[in-house]
Image 1 (spheres, rainbow, N blue to C red):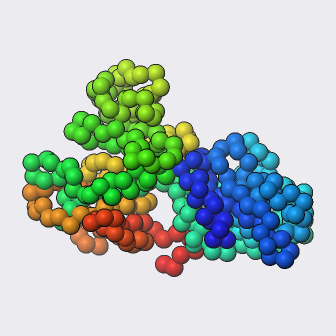
Image 2: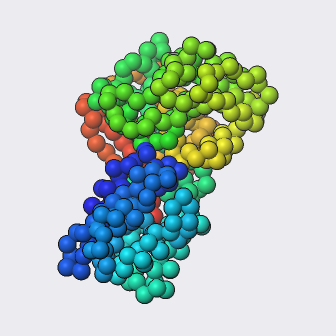
Image 3: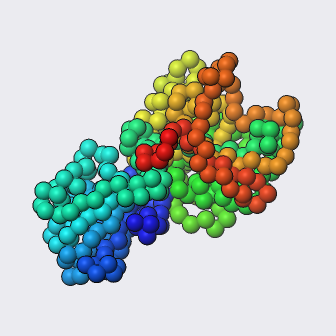
Length: 357
């Protein structure tokens, strides 16, 4: 199963709106006879790739797969049926498929006489497919807030300088994080103050994410770096605002305005409808606070520098309206690691299924 999880990770950031899935086939004697992973929407599923690699050796074999084999016909046929036609005798999977259309493959296999073993290394497989699983369960993108800050929680010095709080290794790691997400989002404050590019650099492989910019009044400068040809950009304006004129490959999305601010729940719904299953928040403090206050933060990836800036510095997070300790947003610490001279923390709003609470 760990080999299957590793295979699935090969396509992280490439498969949306589909999950990452890996599959390994073991012959009756326990030897590996085939393996495969899902490469992206429209491509064969992991089980089909593994069956093609195994050929006739698949008969009587065990299929070890990270996600329950699907039972529906989309761009490709049901994987459960493909396994049955190949003569698979046993199926071991980690995570039950949470989508109503695709679920039911395990039942179909059992009814056909195949031995089915669910839940093997579920927690590890959940972590590898976390972005997609969180999205389909919530019917909205899985939202990760990324920030770089000082040890005392500041994103910039009192004079506004912020380059560079974290070191080069941390900045390179951020680009790998971007590549794993479908879309990256910044607010208008970050847009006008920093003119971010939001593309992939440092030779990070993968498909550049959709760049999403919140610009309620449609005042994005025509020369903004996010409007270059490196990746598509979606400019989100308030309903009724004059739409900005953009280069052809970029688009405008209008969403309702509530109490003078863009409705981020409506934005999340619109992004999900466009196939966005994972969304990375990269700036700034107001944007992150809005998502946190709305209960839309699923993960936090923090790069903490060994630096003190004091109370005059700009905080990484704006006011959440919290007045007592018990109302604070409590997170679950998942990973702690060192990236150069900085510390990288990964936290979740809630434990993943299969993990101890």
